[in-house]
Length: 99
Image (tube, rainbow, N blue to C red; front, side, top):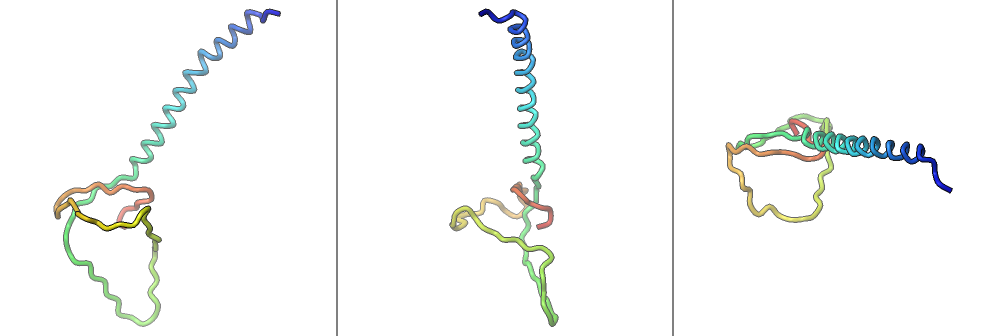
């Protein structure tokens, strides 16, 4: 049995309209994802100095914010290739200003 020509034309029309729409939607989603990744980028200027924190009190000191730090693999910093006054890019997942 032969299929009606109308069904074939309808299927062809759906494919011709649907494929470009799907491609466009996937590109928009990818662009939005990349924009979200770049939104978490900050620049800082390197300075040198001492960090001194002194607490003189009786009682318990609790931090407002704490963080558990870990690295993917153990190692040592062999060389820091930035000097005081250089501008560096600080980027990473979950990076917040002032921390």
